[in-house]
Length: 75
Image (tube, rainbow, N blue to C red; front, side):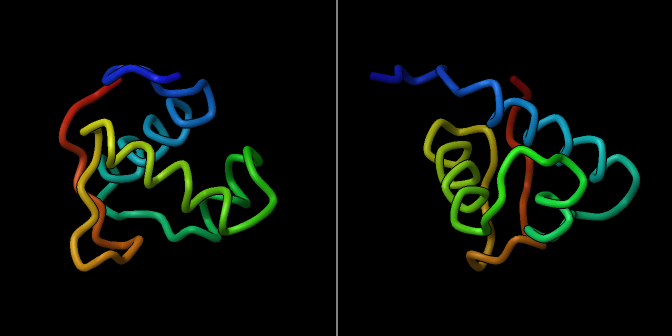
């Protein structure tokens, strides 16, 4: 069972990717996350990773949209 600060390696990789994209001035779409990282083959899996990152306080999704992700803290 995960504790408050536990995220998987794939979730951490996704978080780093989001941070890198935000530093470049944009938020990636779920399709970009799938294509650029290769950590998942479906939108549902990426959506689950995003949900876990949000649940553990790493990101906040505004309006429940992928392009509205705010990074709260880094892994």
